[in-house]
Length: 202
Image (cartoon, rainbow, N blue to C red; front, side):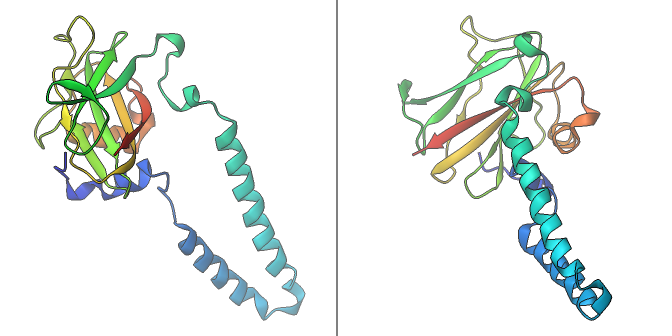
């Protein structure tokens, strides 16, 4: 589960919800703007306007994000969207998800032909679950069991805590590079459907 690629740094930031400048970076830029305008008496009001505008913009972003339902952030296609359930096995039996357990994917493809899963670890690191190998592709769904269980499982060997699993359904098997490009630029991959799931590892 820790087969990591150095080029995943940008993906870490995106999946962690911070593809742009961090808070400290934004504050540093704001301080620089205020320092430049502080010396001009005629523009003294700018020192109050800039922080006010920044706070207002942040509040608008929070309101917009919270007002969207989970369905809006997941798969396109409404009620016909594919779905996935996560469960864990220890020595072949159902068990809580803990370090060392096998993470099992039960899928309802609804027209998708391939499946991939990428997790965001508690420390923000991107972990490739499916495909597991650097040169592997996403799993083909033609051989799903009658119950929809994927024949690949991922061993949970990362840190304990809260994970977010990004399940990616596609029309054909994709390489890691193709999956990475699609997640970094969703507008370039209209045939992908992504489902986001929480996972607690004890």
